[in-house]
Length: 83
Image (tube, rainbow, N blue to C red):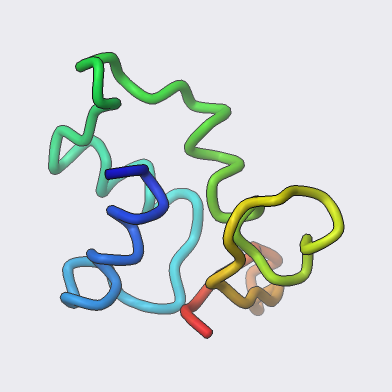
């Protein structure tokens, strides 16, 4: 299962709460020992970009599925939630 599919599943199950930030993804990956299918750890840049790449606001930039919406929160951080 791809990383974004795992994130979506965790959002739907309540294991991750919405809205979420990149920092929350990093903590969740570490806490649940989420690895690539080959057993390697995800690179920080992958974790930093996975939400942005899945954001409907970036529909022109990649061909990935776009199941998330985003906004800048009061602290100036980008946060995401399921559409």
